[in-house]
Figure (cartoon, rainbow, N blue to C red):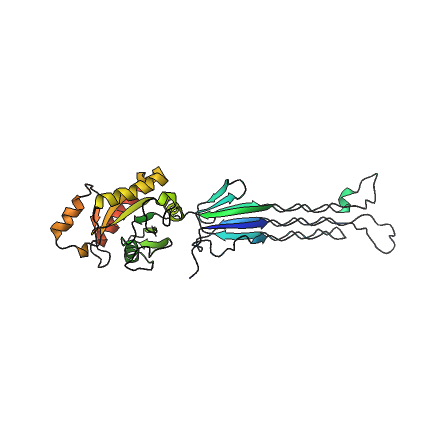
Length: 332
C-alpha cells in the first residue's frame, strides 16, 4: 500500500513554442520563389484535473519537473509546426493549488473533473511568409517561439467527505468505519493505530450514498501541531457533519467531549457549528444498562448514542442518526 501523502511540491513547465521557419519556394522554372516559411506550433499547456480515482497525492513525485511538450518548428511550403501536447496532472478532489513563492491559493479543485490550466504554453513564432510585404518581398527572418510558463506549486489535499469521525486515540473510530462502510482500516487496541485518514462509503438501501472519513485520533494541543496535529485537522474542514466518538469506559466523558470540541474550535470555529452526534462506544465493556445510562447522562446532551462497534450494538441507530444529519444538510 502506498504511503498516504496530502501535500506535495512540484515544478511544472509548459511547452516552448516552436520557431517559425525561414524558407523560399524552390520549384523548377521559378528561380526566385517567394517566402514560404510556416509558423511554429504552440507549446503544450499544463493542466491539473481532479479525479476520484485518486485518494491522495502519493502517485506524484516531490520536486519533480512535469513538462508539457514543445511546439514543433515551422517548415517550408507554409507548413505550420504541430502544437505541443498538453500535460494533465491528476489529483484527488479537494486539492488546493498553492503558489510556493507567494503562498497564495491559486485554485481549489472541489468537484470531480474540475480542470485548471496551471501553466500556459508559449506562442509559436511566425515564419518568414508572415512578414512578406510590398516593400520586403523576401524577408530572411522569422520569429523564435516563446517560452512556456514555469512555476513551483504546492499541492495540498483537504479530503472531501460527508461525515467526519473525530475522537481521542483508541476510541474505536476505525471499528465503526469498518462496520458501517466498505472500508477496511487497520484496527488494533492501542493508540494511534490510525496514522492516516481512512475513507469509506455508506450505501443505504434507498440509494443514498455518503462518504465518511476516519480522522486520526486527536490529542490535546492538536491545533498547535501536537501529536499528528495539523496534518489531519485539515481533513475535517470540508465535512458536512461530525460524529464525536468517545470511549464510554473513560474517566471523565464530559472532559473528553470538551477537549475534542475545543481542539476543533481553536483550529476552525466553523467546525463546531456543523450538525453532530456524540457516540459513546464500547458499551460491551460496561456492566448493566443502568451504568450505561448513568454514563450517558454525564454529558447532559440530547444527541448522544450508546453503541458497541465491536459487536454491532445500536449500529442501526447510528445509521439513522447519519441519515437525519444528512437530511438536515440537504434541506439547509
